[in-house]
View 1 (cartoon, rainbow, N blue to C red):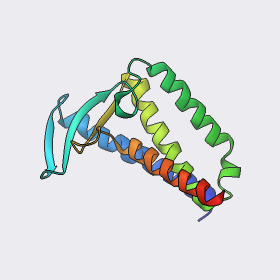
View 2 (tube, helix red, strand yellow):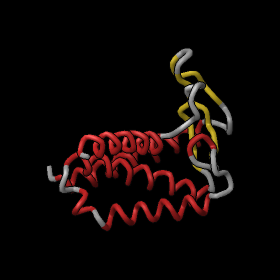
View 3 (cartoon, rainbow, N blue to C red):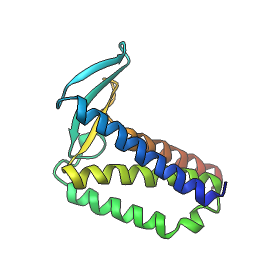
View 4 (cartoon, rainbow, N blue to C red):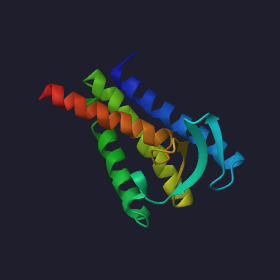
Length: 146
C-alpha cells in the first residue's frame, strides 16, 4: 500500500468511525444522558461542545471552522510532501480525519458532539482522539528528528 493511500485511508476511516459513533449517540441519547460502559472507568454521555478542548472558546464556532478549513486545505495541498514519510502520512491522516469529523458537526449543528466520558478528563469523541494521538505523535516525531 502506498503512503498516499495510507494517508487517505486513515483519514477516511476516522471520518466514518467518528460519524457512525456520533450518529449512534445522537439517535440513542438525550442531551446530558449518560450510561456507564465500564464500571468506574468509562461512561458515554451526550454533550454538545461549542468550544474546543476542555470547553475553552465557547461562542467562537466560526473561528474554529475557519481554522479547520485552513488545516484541511494545508494537508490536502501538501499531501505529496507529507506522504514522503510513512509516519507523517499516518499522523497527518489522523489530523485530516479528525478535522473533517469535527468540522462536519460545527457546520451541521453549531457544536461538536462529545460522548467519551472518563469523569476525570473532559468528554471527547473519535475525531478528538485522533487529533490528540496525532499531536503527541508529531511532537515525538519532531523531537526525535531535531
